[in-house]
Length: 154
Length: 184
Image 1 (cartoon, each protein chain N blue to C red):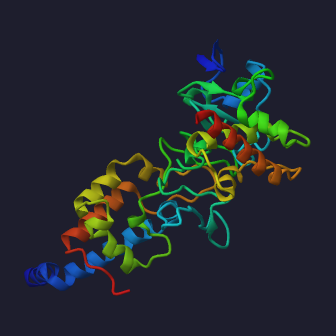
Image 2 (image 1 turned 30 degrees about the horizontal axis):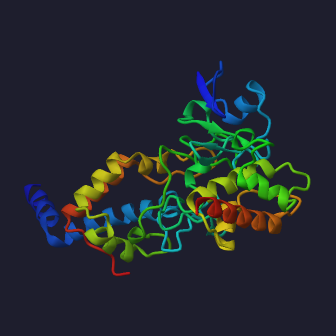
């Protein structure tokens, strides 16, 4: 089957019921999305499908209906997405394992809410777990990224 | 013998019998509508789905992860329900259930925590049943795949009682009997 990931079309020979995360990591070597719980409860595997956040561990690849974006395709070291830049600025990551999922969830939130409150952030991000407890920095970075995106638009 | 049949036919035709048959049919409908597979997503204006039922645990609780489906009832304001609830049930223990769409019923159709009498009056009221006649409610149950998910909820979850066809039949019987509601 064909799968478009990070603006590149791939031909993959897999069963329809293989989770998208398996395809990304094991078939395509795209290892930014992480395996955490495997049942959509921790958010480490979060990627975008047509801009919306999805848990790639629980989405069958045969059910993917749009273009997939992973942390590798969100931005690059030379041209970071506003959320990635804010993560660096606020030094959010500690162990870093959950952070690609956190960033993808935050980027998705900012597409629908340009000025999120603490409550908006908590509503959206509470299903992205961080065992290091970086939540206060996550909140601050999401707000900084939102401000940056508003500045670019104005 | 003929007299006995005549008495039975007369009794069945009597308003009291029809009322009893209608009340029994409604009781069966209520068993379904109040079951966690239905009621957990028929919640109120806080837009928070519930986790409850014998296959869940001792006490009902709001959906974990601080989830809110928002006023859109699909999570469009924050993170869509479909972020985790894919097109099919997860086959893994405690994995997320899924269907072709995943959303909360409109606020006007709140059933969670409501009594049989309250839900009964809602179902008869087009302003609180999606602008439907009772026949249209039965048709909705007959045709809507997300409703049918209640009977195929995936591993580890108790299905709704009875069957789709039986609920449709119960609703028709209740309607034919004048749609009586319990006092409380």
